[in-house]
Structures are given as structure tokens and as C-alpha cells.
Amino acid sequence: VPNQQILVNMVSRRVRQLTMGHRPLVEVLRTTLTSDIALMEIAQGKLTYEEVGAGHAKALLPFVDAPKKRAA
Image (cartoon, rainbow, N blue to C red; front, side):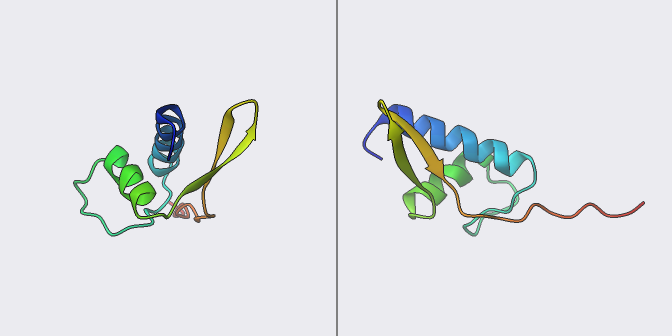
């Protein structure tokens, strides 16, 4: 990622997804922080971004199913 601000935006968006229940795209331990998971995914090329104009970027995240809620 050529720009620090793009990296920060990618990590924050992915952390939000992971916090909402999306599954990691890399193997991790249960104790791994969501920010570390996001950084590992970016470093391993699992996440990319595209420029959407005027220096702004949009993170391109592969579709990952959120876990289904269990009936009580």
C-alpha cells in the first residue's frame, strides 16, 4: 500500500468487519487482535484497494459470510 492513510483506512474498515463477526482470511489464534488480523491479511495480499478519484481509495474486500445467528 503506497500511502499510509490508505493503509489506515483499509485496516479500520476490516477491523469493523471482523468485529461484526466476519471470518478472518488468514489463520490466527483466538488471542490475535483484530487490527493484527487486518494487517496480516493486507500483508499476505488477501485485501486490495482501488482509487476512486481525487486521491481517495476504496478498500476491496472479498465477500466473507458473517456467522449466522442461532435460534434461542
